[in-house]
Length: 434
Ligand code: DLL
Image (tube, rainbow, N blue to C red; front, side, top):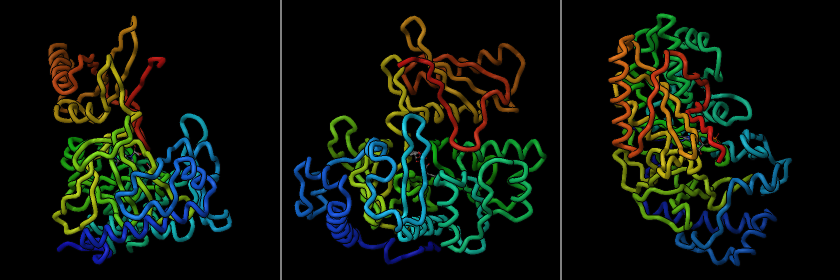
């Protein structure tokens, strides 16, 4: 039986949902124009007045907002409520430049928890489950986001945060964790540590569901994780600017349901800014319909994906986004060819001898870009015969060439050489000074 958190909303007929979105959009535009000097100026500069926005089709008249706007107005210059109405801040660690600050009213936290309560229900997680939240707690949104969402859904939360992996595994067994929430990279590491402790996640724990995201991962990686640990692995998506982790796939594992009463999604051509049609791959742009403290209008997240509006087998009518390839700026350009690290992962994970950990190293030698993929072999495939190693290197090289159309160097490295991650993994080392 398919369960819903709020069937009236989740199964709302599409025309009703669109009417609701239109109404919310009109209110939103009015709200930001009158509550934020930033938006008033942005709209005035673009020559748009709130009354110009009546239908969903008018959305494209609105100017975009960017991560740089959040940085330029650091810390709270884009907020639409005075600070005393905030109940929480989260801060994203800017790897370059200033961090970005997101503020939440009580209602923003409630909406965020509702998104996740719906998502958890859609993957069959609810009362009676124990969720181990091993996303980082603190300024990062992963830990507290899932924590509140799970409590809302009546799930028992084990707030381990990330790190201290052996203890995590002890608690998993002692307290009967049935759901694990962490990055896919951390789960791989956890499984490795479990194996070293002589613990089988499949046989010795009650774990049955994983909620993995915060970084790109591939269908092929999902297959490996499910096969190795016997759990169902679901994709969860969100960004700190939109609140944090928000939406997941449903039990059919066919795209992430984005709650249409809370968000409007578009996919655009990253260069021209033109809206693309359903099914076309481009940059995700999101407008928040229910946020009070920091609503975002046509926010250029930068993630590359495809929108799917087909009705889902689960009966939910809200649009889906298909696997997120990463941000446009995660894309490497090597000798003029575009490569997403996720594509490399997809290829590697189809080769049984290749383990789950890899690193892409890009260099520039004599004005020429080179790409080297460092990989670890699986235990079963491990060999000290030079011929076997050379054969595997060639096999991987050919598979990558076939998909990427790029000649790469493959380097087999010893088990444990590639750094393991307890949060978002770093899978690329770009040594070029671009
Ligand atoms: O990573 C929020 C989050 C926490 C999502 C826990 C899921 C689980 P940020 O640190 O702001 O927020 O990073 C957001 O991470 O724009 C994507 O590029 C990437 N990302 C997040 N989820 C996925 C996913 C959190 N499922 C950025 N697949 C986003 C691919 C993802 N990329």
